Length: 257
Length: 168
Image (cartoon, rainbow over all chains, first blue to last red; front, top):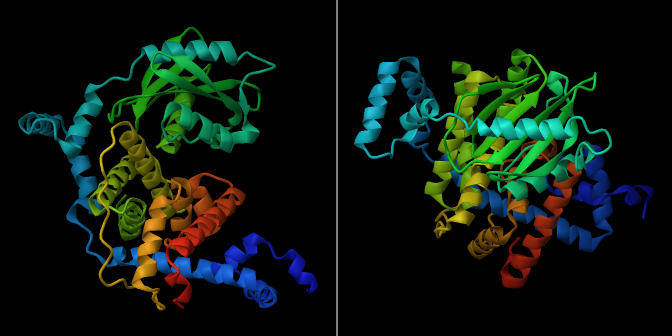
């Protein structure tokens, strides 16, 4: 064994099989594999797996894309009803006519019609008031275990949750916890700005494919923005101006999708 | 906006391929892609995505797929398996038909998180960094997930199909 051999890791072997090593490293791995028949067989099998998978699925990109997946058409069908109310009314009639199988038009109409539950804001504000002031144990799982936090709360809420990264708005993740709520298990993520001001994001599962606009509510110093999208209802709570809360909510909303 | 849509359009074939590979069901796969595109357009109107669009779209697609899986777990319905393509293309050295069938079956047995990861790297050829970003996991986690997927696949295809060993 040469000195290089000791430094060849399993990750190097995978990168070799995936063809992403630079020339120098590739040569080192090749030298290593020449002396290691078992590893060489394993790597050859991985390469064969890659080939088999490309052979299995590669042909899909050669197929004609169905019309319903035409991006520009989806976008223009979306824009049309949103621009004028008569268009939306026509769409609503269409939905009644075809009994609720309304597809895209239906979603826009429902978006307008369905307010997010404002009781959610009350719950979220209570949870915020209870834990945002907590010094010793503000969260159950701290930010340094962010991956675990996301996986755990996804499992408990039965939704694919990403822990939003709000650093672009000057907020660092503190961590999160699981809470009881009217809708079942709720997740609370807590963030902190440079001055120690805390913002919480409260999330409960929603049994609906509907999407609502942001709803604003204020209870004393605390303000909340509530919305429903992608099978979850969210409330962002903090002692912040409405504009700033809205900027933060938009970023959270996008990342949660 | 139009440029955003143009760029999105170039990603559609790869999104279809990824969805097909995840589900083995062409209709369901296109449903997921449609949902993904609608969602991305909805959000693209409001926020310019940061980072590569393709990776972001894969991420949106995965969220759609995972939520769909959860819905199905609550109200299961049988998923038909797609027949193998009669003339697989795209590979210079063609593994035998039997090996392909074994691989397809083994893929369906893999835990979902391993399948998602392996397909992003092996079929979509995303860099490790992009694949890790799509899955929202650290690169180290991605590498061990890939290693587990490959080991499981290797074991399943070896145990069930000695033929694979002879195909070079």
